Amino acid sequence: MRRFLFHVTLLLLCVVRISAQQPSPEDYKVYTAVFIEDVEERKDKISSVTIIKKLETDIDDTWLIDMLKDGQQDQLGPNLIMPGNEKLTVPIDTAYWNLVLLFHNTHRQGKLSAQEFHIKEKIDLANSLPIRPNHIDKDWKHYYDAHPLSAGIYAFSDVYYSADGKTAVVYHSIHCHGLCGHGHITVLEKKEHDWKIKFAVRLWSI
Image 1 (cartoon, rainbow, N blue to C red):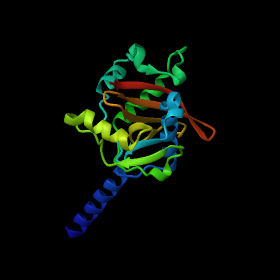
Image 2: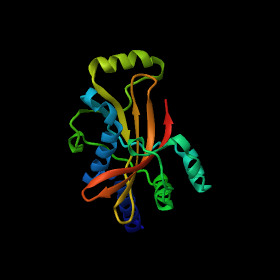
Image 3: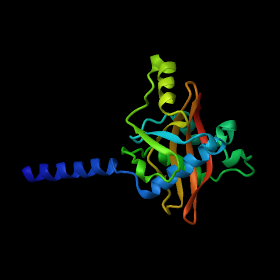
Image 4: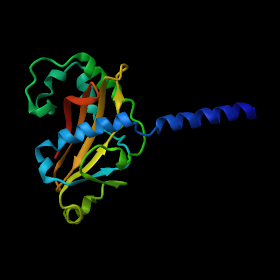
């Protein structure tokens, strides 16, 4: 009996370790590609960014998942974002949407490291969003007094990969300047050694 309990405990520890696996170097390449695209239009006006240390696991994508299950992805309208705001010329392959559905059920816990990102901006890690709901104006003023050229406060989820490792799905959010921000699920493809954004879906914006 004791031996049985020992093996069960060992198995549970392994499951916890897997579910809390830390981001890989490849994950950071994905995060970097998403961040660079996100700040492209204001890259000359920023010098730092705050990133939430814990991986985001609470992603409100229910409405998108319901649409995908009903085959209504062609009705996303302005919530479907192409790189460089280009227009969609051909329908997006169903295989990409299937990866988004799989991503929905695979969020893992973990923590980010500033040293692993490949961006020029100075990174400040935060344990949580440093803005209180009842002190929004005061807290944002305090934040920008301390980080005057910040790109904002970013959070990232874990990264889900296709079986061949050539496609990735990730969620990120940004909060900035009071009532400003968005949350996107982004699909990327690997081109040689670099990750390029295929498209993104805006889950929310303020």
